[in-house]
Image 1 (cartoon, rainbow, N blue to C red):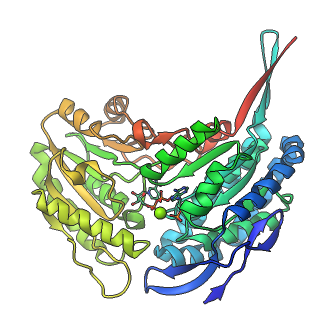
Image 2 (cartoon, protein in one colour):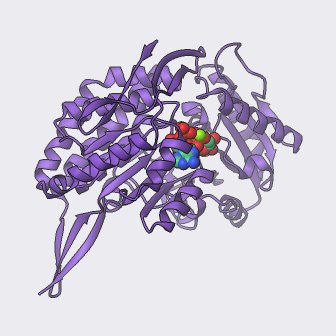
Image 3 (spheres, rainbow, N blue to C red):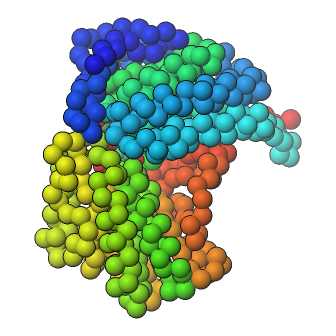
Length: 462
Ligand code: NAP
Ligand code: MG
């Protein structure tokens, strides 16, 4: 057990203003592995002041120099990849291979992409008799969740820094340790004091204080739709800019000409990865009625193969929430073909990989974000029916389409109300914009679209 007592503010680890701490628990064995300070409004104020003070110099730093600092940051993250992966496994419970490849690997790629974008982006352009300047928005307040704890910090901090903004991050209470590692990496990379600040603490205390702070110009939030709605209201009321990356209930649409076995197996893997704690997971599989029984059998077999190797959920509350959804699915008449509400292990917050068949579009498990290893398989009659079901939720974050050829899949994808679609198993692209249609959010992260979220324009007429 390690008791950490500092927060990274103005380039140094400073003691918290108050005495409260947060216990960090390993969800695989339920042991307390560390404590971190529970920051208060006072700590948030110190961090925002530091960010404000650092803003003029960082905003005026030539983009090539900002790019060099981001490249150094990428290199530190790469050098510390094993330590990062081990930390995420300890506080989130994700299997070591996933922690290496995704939780530690993706942030390296994203930091690298912003090192390149900062160097290449045209921060000035000409239009008619005007010069348009793309200037930093100012001080960013970032509130991040636990499901991809480092990625979600880097997806905000890297573009903010590339744009010339300074930032205060409030990470999720469940995963503050990798956030601390990131602050160390920022320090090692030679990023000036006050440009990046970290305040650990509880959402309704430190998170709320950050969203409400008048010294914050842009609030960037990733998490639940319920909290996102509150943050959006606070930010809008204070005329701050706001970016919200919220929940999803994405559809994996398997058209009749597709390679069914591949589409089902990749679909199941997508939902079970990270124990289903992925906002963009394809938690609804849509299959044509003629192939339905075969798909259900394939999915049940695929899910059973995962056994209890998927890792626990992040905490007891999430486990209980997911089990309640599974019970609700049974109660509403869906047919369990793999898994179920019983805990597969005595210790740790585990839930079995679960698959429901005979799910209809209006059922709770087909509408609400479960955030656990639970797949719902729905039957469609024809393509129009599939489209109606796919678009029939309040969310629109991601999705997948499988067909005999890419053009057919892409034609269907164009009609989907969602921010990202993988065509016949397309690969993750860290440069592609990520974000939601409808209630899945406001704004985009990653790539050049993620950078422009942190810029505002000024035009000079000549
Ligand atoms: P959450 O409460 O929305 O947490 C996200 C972040 O917001 C955390 O840093 C949290 O702090 C903070 N927060 C909470 N209440 C706040 C408030 N009143 N003001 C400012 N910040 C606040 O999400 P959760 O409770 O951890 O998870 C609940 C559900 O949200 C999940 O089951 C899932 O459906 C969804 N979720 C979605 C995503 C996504 O990527 N879209 C990620 C995580 C969760 P604390 O850590 O202290 O709560
Ligand atoms: Mg919470």
